[in-house]
Length: 471
Image (cartoon, rainbow, N blue to C red):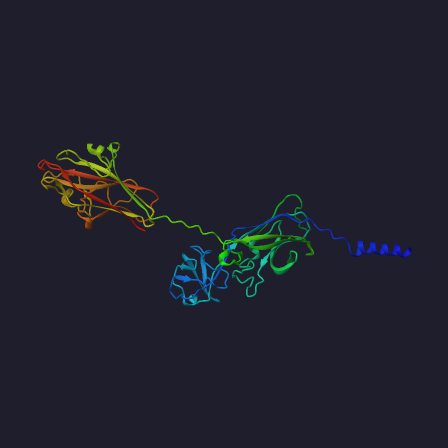
């Protein structure tokens, strides 16, 4: 009986004093890591058949390198191409197909060697948020993120890895901690997770509370750790999927740890991050140009289509897109009608509109002509517009001018000139050297002045307009 009592006292002593029950702290809740970009980094092998100075580079789709196609590359990306430490940086100007890309300049000889690498790193700012459920004065919060353990890969050399995040250019100054904690970057640690347990390596990013510092616990308050900025950040892993499985995410672990002031683990919460190829969305907008001619119409008879302070002749009401009907002319006077020219294009180089006449106006029965204008002082020509304000009582004349609405025209208001005869003498009358923001228009004003001795009859001429886009 005495021995039994002794046994129970010994058991009680061991339980209470030697092997006390460890009280597990409440784990933080609502733990998540939001990445500013979940796109895989790119790491492909230079294929065979490339040559120095070429701007088209092929990759090896059957390589052991992680990236098998160009599907995770985009125009404007920066790529490093070369062998070992002899890398050259280029910009992608186009994606030829799933095995070739176009760069901004001729490739260096060292970059054209088969077996070299094509690397484009993708990085992200990590925003880790959580709600603490316990507090340890002067304790530590640690964020552990998967680092590579693959043979031949280094977890902090600035080159993307297949099985974890590379430390890249991350520095402590690029880490923001909650509750006034101080940021630091540790080495890599081995952690076993799961059942059966799997051991992996993790980068350690730590936020240390000041001596006597605390954090809220169980109040619903959120702690936020921001890792990275616009300059210094972790590098996203590359895909480890086969080409046929592109579009399938790779999953990477992270761990949020809470430690006490003696750096003893209080609790930890594992989480996961999914990375995937970015989706290239392509579409084609066909080159287009629209050019229209329409009648100014009766509503614009006093619009100044032929210049400030001028009016159109009564025939304006009959003017259409392909007919300028002067009708009976007023002799020894200016007769004026107008049309509106409008052009729009999606060409980056803009457009140009030219005009010429097939020949001078002629009497359709006798072939008697109305000469083209010489303007005042006989000094205008198809290439040179000058004022025309005086009616020549000895010579009938036909000419034109342009009035701007919202386009670029090579005309001074009130200056006239004759049309060039034939396509070889076509002249620019509207022009845009960049992509227009919308429809651009100008008035063309036709002017006839005939003498009292001009042969009676019906006269006709033909004006040809051509609109050309610059792509």
